[in-house]
Structure formats: C-alpha cells, structure tokens
Amino acid sequence: MQTQSPIFDEIAKLMSEAAGAVDGVRREAETVARSQLQRLLSDMDLVSREEFDAVKEMAAKARAENDRLAARLAELEARLGKTS
Image (cartoon, rainbow, N blue to C red; front, side):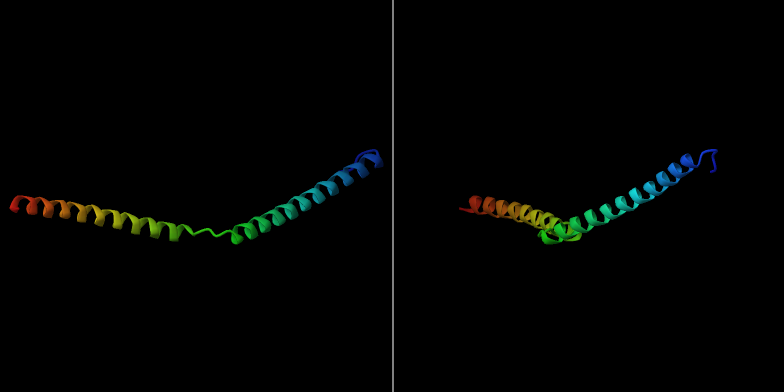
C-alpha cells in the first residue's frame, strides 16, 4: 500500500513487522508453556484414563460379588437358625 508520505509507508511497514514478531513470540511462549506442562504432568504419578476405567470396573464387579455373597450368607444363616 503506497501513500503520499514515505513516513506513513515506513510506519506501516514497521507495524507489519512488529505484528509478525509478536506472533512469533506468542507461538514460542505457547511451545515453552506446553513443554513445561507436559514435563510437570509426566513427573506426577497420575494414572491414565484407561487404567482408571479398568480399576473402576473391577471395583464394581467386586462390589456385586460382595453383595451376592452377603445375600447367600444371610440365606445360609437363616437356614442354620431355623434348624437349630
């Protein structure tokens, strides 16, 4: 874009270059922040979603089995109480 004043042309050019530099700094800051966050998370002892879901399913099965065995025990105790 050419204007009548070379000063305005120079200012427009500098503003365009500054916008490009700011965008580069923003991308670099995002990259650094992302790598720091990944490092922090890898240092923590967190479980994956798949591991959590597997343990959750195991707990539900164990709870159901416990309920079934508790009902059976109550039934056997009731029978034993009647025969005594």
